[in-house]
Length: 142
Image 1: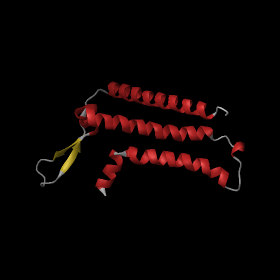
Image 2: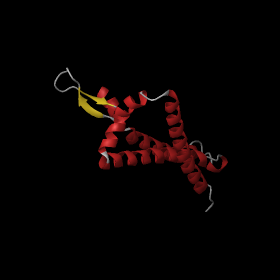
Image 3: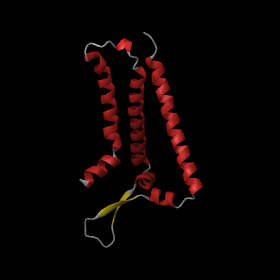
Image 4: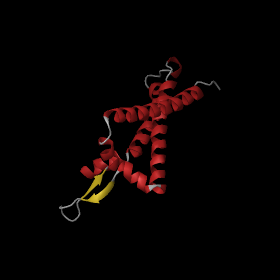
C-alpha cells in the first residue's frame, strides 16, 4: 500500500489530468441530460474553462518534469528525490532522499516565505493567464 501511495503522490499528473478532463466532459453532458434542462439558461463556460485550466496546468507540469528527467537528471533527483540504500538496514531497503527539502529547511524564515510567495504567485499568474485565454475563447460566438 505504501508503494501505491508513493507512486500516486510521485506521479500525480497521471490521475489529475485524467480527472480534470473527465470532469470537463461530464460537465458538458450533465445539465443537458438531467430533466431536459437547457444549457442556455446556465452559463457554465467559466466552469469548463476552470476544469480545462486544471488539466492543462497539470499536463504542463508533467511535461516539464519528464523533460527534466530525460535531459537534466541531476536537477530532477535534487528536486524530486532519489532512492538510496538505508545504512544498517536489510539488503533491499531503499528510501527516497529529498535534497531540495533538506536545503529548504536550512533557509532563514524570510527566505522560505519569499521563495514560497514567489512560487505561488508564479503558478497563480500562469493559471490565471491560461484560464482567461480559455474563457475568452469559449465566449466567442460562432
